[in-house]
Image (cartoon, rainbow, N blue to C red; front, side, top):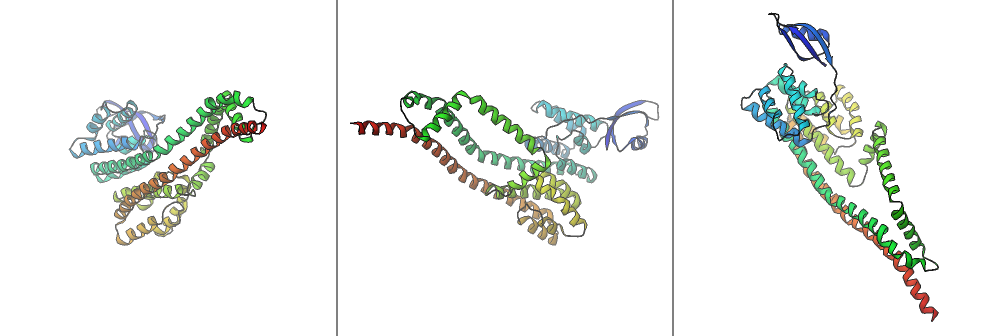
Length: 399
């Protein structure tokens, strides 16, 4: 579907303009005619929206505010007007809300208005609202989405908090090495210059120190180029697929990512299925929320298996990247008729497991990074002390 700017006349001859979503020109004519309007001019609205995906906490707040106002009897247009004029909201986000309000005032459904904002809103919430528009329970679905994205935000925050200390240690190691190599070691240059021969470790240390002190900009340039190359490479589908596949094979990290991906998929499937969306549509939307291209690519076979009459649990069991708890829970849900509850319970369990796995990972990383720092500092101390002791030995044997 596309959005069309149009001008039309009503049965009294009054000119009316607006924006409407339609499949084509004929569909636009039909929709306007049903409203008692006759199309005179139209122009397809080219989608120029280049939107960055809104953060989970922003979507959660939006859904919660919308759900609370709709449940209080406020109209959709009035609710969006209040939300779009909230001064505490960032200007860019308020712009999205204002665009949604304008489309709603022309008769565009909320889901289509959100979809018109480019990638600002994820497919999950758009499809959930689209389902709610047909069933008339937008308020309850909005609150459900608020809880969903709030849980996603809290999980992401816990992961960031757990990784904060390892990141700090990494920065500390880089700073300490840079200071030692660029400032401390050069202080020994005059001393080492008086010695006839130097150990290999000291020679290597001095070479590194001189490079850091005199060619530091090359290190920064190389680091920047490598980062750019990495970003370009991962933008290539084949390379990104390989990276995402290798990610699942890494010790400790691979299991953690599997748990997180399973939690995302289960939580999304639970929300979609409870809204009355068909199984295939649930799977189609849920796969986009996983966040791993390797797992997502395997769903082509999942769709084929389900269409061929295979149970969803058996089809999902073939996907490499989920924990075995997922197909087992889906199988129980299919047998008992409580698939949404089983998936919701599994998602909560997986989120707890991911927190525990993250804590274990950090407990491994912290001592490992301290050992790395100790090895680097130890090498520097040995390289500095070794020639000094050698000179003392030479002086002692000369007497």
